Length: 149
Image (cartoon, rainbow, N blue to C red):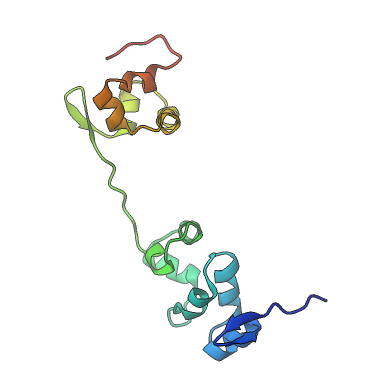
């Protein structure tokens, strides 16, 4: 039999069940937040449970995929922020006289978006830095005999 893991809470060593009872929070909720949500004990106990509504139901009501929510919380996002729709604004880059996303440029140049992103990460430069330094062709043409610049 495994011994209870005691934690410091309000000046005394207590089990997780005792802490949950003291703070009137469901044990399973706190346990999930600690182990799956990677929260601190203080956050896991103090963040509201939205009136007894389960996280899955709340995600559905807010229009957020449950796995997206879990991923966001796992990456350190606050649970309340993880339930909001975060829209990333992709920067547009000037390319051949038009403003385009990197994905659109890749499509135009018949290059794999994932390959281009990987090359930029490996070289430690953003698309804009490549463009300004005149090396943008390298991220599209490395390993193929094509010149389009």
